[in-house]
Length: 382
Image (cartoon, rainbow, N blue to C red; front, side, top):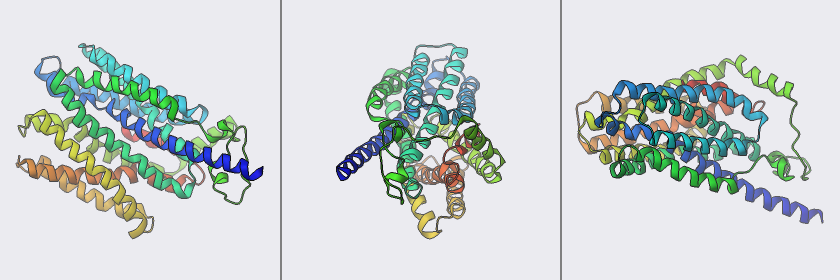
């Protein structure tokens, strides 16, 4: 009977781990789709006389501020709530914000809706980080983290190609209504796919299940530290200088990443003379290369640098700087030159996003604080 019970636990554990990985990868991809619609719709909004570049900048600032403060606050709150509800709810309300953007034409309503979108967007990353910590052990978390991180590039690619096609077909409103519609469909799928922590289903913690010298047994609920102990652990992150260093480095990387994600399509149309589909295609190349860059980063840092992230990060940062110089300083408008350059930029950002965007911090603090660092790191989005 004991063996039969353990086999049942093993089957359910494997099934739910697969579901969690599919859920956070698919779901977070569409978090990105619901985050980047404004980037595609900028030129049509300007051409229609609805907004100018300065007003678009104000709207863009609203989502980043909402996202940064939301990530800081919700990163702490996520340790006290059901991450399944947090993850699904964040995507649903982000869809509603996109819906409001699609049916509006007022500047301050745009700012309000996009700022709220940033707040709800902040639910996504913290939920995924905690889910990875709940369902995967420390020695396997890096591999699954890298797989999940592909969702960043998948979401960007869907936006810059799919949303660009919708804007070409339906006008600027399509850049918001399309993501809202498809995002709701994904939300419905997540209701079945996404799982809470193992204890909710009477399953042991991941380390126990993997047989780390402890008896595998179903439990009604994983024991969690009390509120006071959890808050103490969370606040202890602020005292770690290395986390602050990673946060500042991440902030520098995000400046360049969001500058390209937010303004490159408009820049390529206005300065390089490309169509919206051509510009979207270059950003699609950028995001596809990002997936490869992330996978190569993990391999290089683990194999060549023996788990040391700084040397790999420096190598990727040099590639990023060279690609930015070619894009914004050299006068070339050759589509092939730009294609190669955006591929290099995407490759470098894909790696830096893995390292500075999370894995480095996990390596440093996860043995004691598996997810609390995420809140402080989230401020780097400002």
